[in-house]
Image (tube, rainbow over all chains, first blue to last red; front, side, top):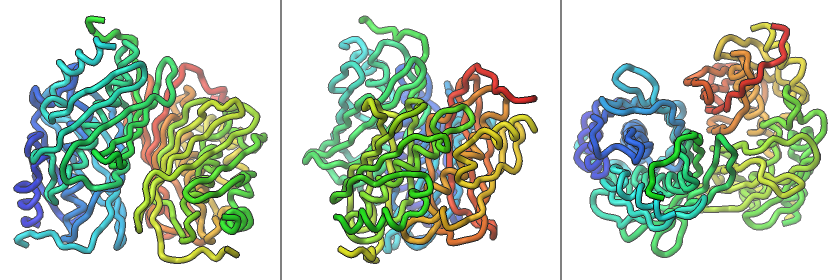
Length: 135
Length: 135
Length: 135
Length: 135
């Protein structure tokens, strides 16, 4: 799975712009990290829901593309449970179903104390195209 | 409503980092814009779902905070309908319900041709705190 | 569109068991009705969220199957906005996107006074199979 | 927790009408069962999404009301993963977050072979009212 991790890390411009790091990718699973900085806050001084979404979304993208064919997100649902002011956030994605066309993933976003910050569920449409990874 | 538009534009660090511009805020409504650039793309070369989410989320935040008291997002659901490669994206949020504790918003994300790119629905919890706007 | 309306009305056993009536089906649109009765209530004496979901879901199913090929629900999201104690509820589904594999629908559930009771969004996977309607 | 299980079993008219049985209720958890019958099918002859939702929703309602104060559903999201033709379905709800106003629950719906049929996530608003259970 080194190929997909390196491919996403090198080519996902938005994740890089936000400062998200992809830590691990395995078949149907992935883990990502965000070190909270000033540019991740909203007007109330807490970590922005959209930054949390971006973190969860990268783990989701890596997990759903881990099987070697391109998967595109078609739906995502997120519940925001706890405000974050500083520190680090982790997102861990797990595959909950997969057939030849659709697959679903749960992503747990936790803070440095292991507390749940957000729960995310996403669905992808699986294309036939291979991902151009080194393999 | 000039107060809330200026407050968010000045203080929402993440929206500024992503490059989202808040165009209009009215009671229960808001409109935002994103000029697509290289840093908004994913590994497949299309606009990242999380960038589209961030755009929709800013319109949602502005609309839900337009009544003068702080509103925090508790749930969001998004359907991604159409890939975007370049150009401009708009998000337009409309309030669909509001009581003293909860409110819901629909956000339509469209491209420069007016085609629907994503449909977003969000719910906020409404706090008693006033937003520190100039008014 | 008479074929699909009659097909669903005759063959959707669960909708009939719940007491939901399909009023209209047009290309990408449908409308359904529920006359609230004692068996639709929850333990708090208000109309059950699952009964409201069932109503919205039938309008969604009819709208998404209105093009003549079988569509199966893969995701649904619902926000419950207002309690209902008695009277009638209507659900009106509108297609928001459709390609050859996926389509999305918004469904508004309203009471007899035209007030929004719930907002529902659903996604279907579109199969190649024709629906066996009289046509 | 015998009080809340008996209260819901006796008073949830819709769950009874659908034929759902509440098996267990514990603090923040609940389990329910549906024996699939002809009235649970849709026009395609498979178990209706709204019947699966009703099953998940009852486990969600029981888990969220297990703390002794009334909780009302404000949002639910469901992914349908696998068609069911016959047999039994189970729903198991687990609390994922709870503060004094809001709480969230994941519900897994499985068939008799333990395969995941649907994944459901729900949010409740927690009222101050006690539930009139025997205690």
